[in-house]
Image (cartoon, rainbow, N blue to C red; front, top):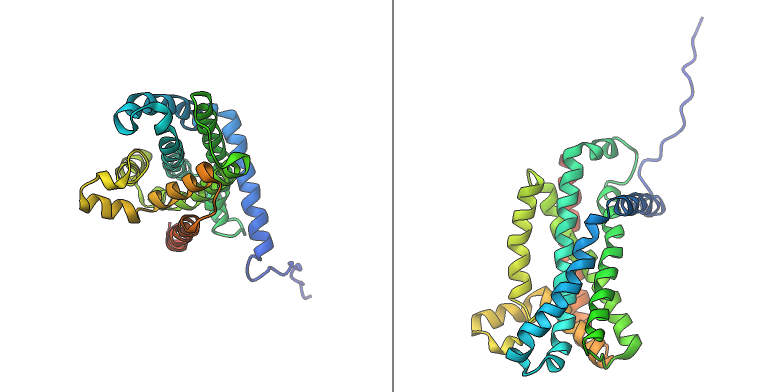
Length: 267
């Protein structure tokens, strides 16, 4: 008597683009739920903008621009870039923590797109970048900042900050995958984050720097983003700096997203 094998459903040879988007958004929702349950992970995008905006404005305003009100158009967009980049560091550290806990071992055996477990939390982190940008602008306005770009310019700057944060977070996602533990990932990330932030035009004009540092600051992707933020918020203009910033973000994603996915597959 011949025993017939039970029929099995045909499996799709690959995950479609629609499935990839759906799976990414599902994992983004999971990350958002984790944020609500652990609100301390939001301190870097809620408390830090409040403290840093007031501190940098009142400490350096007189020394750099002569008075605080003249310094605010320079420092507010710069602080948005700095705060968003700092928030990106937490993306890599949290990824390494999840990897060490074993939760990603379950994701790897599921029939889902390999980019979804990486991109999902990063999509959720866009909420953190949005909060950081809004709070920084809010504090700046309270202490006297008057963005010349109006509501549209500020809205465009916030949108650009969110896009830039998502793009730059791929760098720290890669660090989270290659690091051995969360402490090591944080150390490597800070070692990269501080030069990118302070060797930029975030806090001072680049023409005040020595020539080698000025040359680096001019091509620093963080400087490109901050210049674009200033053009949008202060003048309401979509200038060439905005295009260069978006191009720089695209280059970062094109390099580090494939590297991150490839590393994830080999783990």
